[in-house]
Image (cartoon, rainbow over the protein chains, first blue to last red):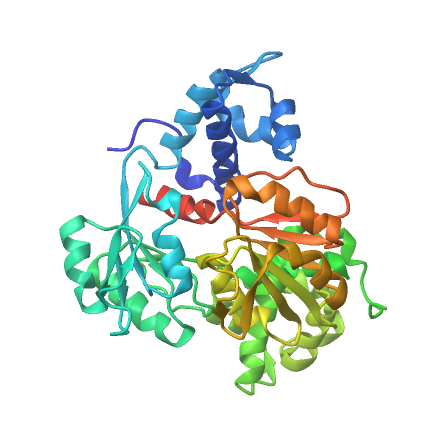
Length: 211
Length: 211
């Protein structure tokens, strides 16, 4: 059962994303041994807005003390709970090319909160290859691994033309959330939420400023 | 010189990112031969909000005809111009690991709008390796390549502990915008804008919905 807390379903993706950014900052501070930090110090150090931090964290009010700041470790743990990170989520990656292989070894996906339990491909030249601590498996094994390991999260790192069928297979296998790196819009099923990651959006945002 | 148009400096990153999403959709429609599309059709097909589309594109007003929709190709070109894609931007990638190698071969970065002209690493085991159409070069060659090719965009795909020094070297070499994939906050210089890409933010957004 999820820990008692706020009703986070009503929180927008943007606010969620900012909470993730604060969490990243708090972890870094916690590991450095910092006990307290003010919204202004946090804003300066991590290039954030102090007013926005105060607004977003007001809901965690008891952890902020006026004139003193936030208690780093308790706020970190509170944010982890509220982001659903109070238990381990298991993930699989379909597509063992460069992006899939990079993600399979990504520290954040091999942490106490997330664990990659399978890396799949259909290319016989890739199947059996060692990627970090994992061997690439044939895509046909997906459903069994998802069942055996209670996998909830799928990462799609296949070419655009293979994305829909692999998404469908993930949904069919019982995966409930899919991070899609393929540059294509998927026909989404209600049981498997999709989050598209289009790296060109970041590149274009920078390009705009170059004029 | 930039084409005459709106003052885009005042447009928020969020709106810019939505314009990028519309552009992606319009390109797909254009390639399929579609001449016109209504905001509602576009919203349905690409899982967007019709009201938001109309609001964001209202500034390109003459291209939307009430009851008929937007003219696909002219709107595509208008968006490309306004996003700064009216000329080629040259990029370099520092870090030839999995993410750097994936990006070096990314179609969007080898297009009419963006071109990767160098992939760099300090690891002698990687220098000289062929990645797609490029050979990995030693990081010491960065400044010369940036100068010779008038590179404006840098992509940082190095480990966290190497990110700041490589960012500094990019800024020093004259690079004006940096996309940072290293999970670390950089001390930003005014001459080289940073956009952080933290893939865990997307993962955590999905995890939140899993509860």
